[in-house]
Image (cartoon, rainbow, N blue to C red; front, side):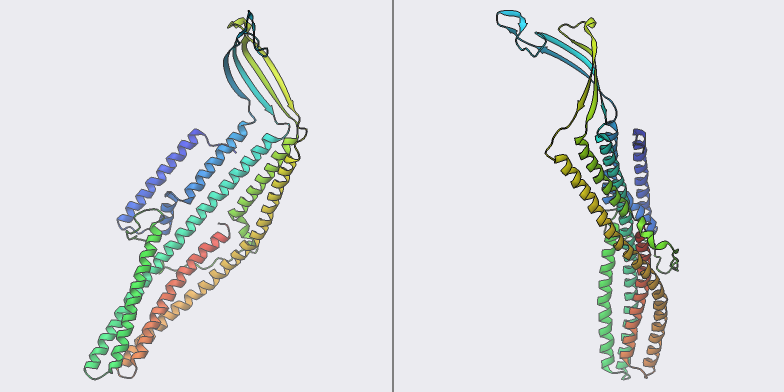
Amino acid sequence: MALVSRSAQRGSRVLIGAVTLLAGGLAAAQTNSTPLTLDDCIRLALAAPSTLTAAQQELDIAQYGLRQARAGFLPQTQLGNGFTYNSPLAGSPDQFSFIALNGIREYASQFTVLQEFDTSGRLRAALARARADRSAAVASAGMARRDLRRAVTAAYYQLLVARRMVAVSREALEEARSFERGARLLAANGEAAQADVVKAAAHAAFLEQSQRAAELEAEIANHELASFWTQDAREPLAVEDVLDRAVPPPETPAPAAGRLFLRRPEFNFSEARRQGFLADARQARAQLLPQVNLVFQYGIDSLHVRAGDRGYAAFINLNIPVFDWFRARSQARQSELRASQVEVTRSAAARVFSKDYENALARVRLIYDQIAATSAQVQLSEESLRLSRLRYDEGEGSALDVVAAQAQVVQARSNRYASIAAYLNARADLEVASGR
């Protein structure tokens, strides 16, 4: 796989700049009260620093590790220069005192090439480990992106539901206060009991408290969504409300769709970890095998600085391990056991992910059917409230019936919006469970 070149890095910086400008444009558009769609919120979150940014940096780190591993197969060159002074023997100025040296003055200027031949497989194992680390970083970045998108989606729908609950509570409070005023007027004219006024007033007070709680939930939900891309979480967000739109029906899975969960990036991450441990095992076993390297030197290593003294030398080194007290074998076995452990964990995770996929599929189907039922509940509850008001105004019904009908309308409307949001969230969960 090709490494990231400098031009590619510059291109990535340009892309990041473009994404930042896009995020700024979207933020400016939001400030001008242009509703933010779910895709807009996701783009803003992806452009802001987050766990995804750290995962992408980890991928860059793994890229450099892969480059280092590949560089191990290439010859290493260097130019060394040195001067050595060896003191003469006392009473013999022409003889040097340190026998290991070549003379009183030694000049060295050598161009050295070192080439290592991977006879033991150590370099290949290091390359395999670097590739595994990069694959793990790719999978980790994919999971971070997916999780961030899912978190933003949940916060988006939570804000929509919270604001709808505020509207439902507000409408119910207005209805309750209207009924309370009517009950007080009838009681003043002697046409209704004081108990009816008390019931109506108590129900209105209860709805007022519910509205304040709903407003608090909506404000907190606004903070939650805005915190994905801005520090000014207090500013109200203008978001596109999709809860009144027709929701798409559940997709009919193909006969072989039961194994879609195998596309989840968690499996790629586990496989990368397993390959990394196997590479560690090969690298440990390589310490027990012979390794050959070639050293070539060209230049001057003389008692005088003269061009005529230049020359070259070649060295072939063969290192044969003899005994290491079973250290390399223990390291190899340890890495193999870790690879086996990852395989066991992967098998256990496959069962859990299969269950998650089936659960998500069942929730999508069930909640979709509930949407139609809650819509019917809203219509019936509103009709029941209308009839209760008519019977009470004509003196045939009780205030308790009206209050109960008002509470039923609030509950039915809340259930409808909650079901729509739950269905949209269930579809998002299904996408995660199926590896999309």
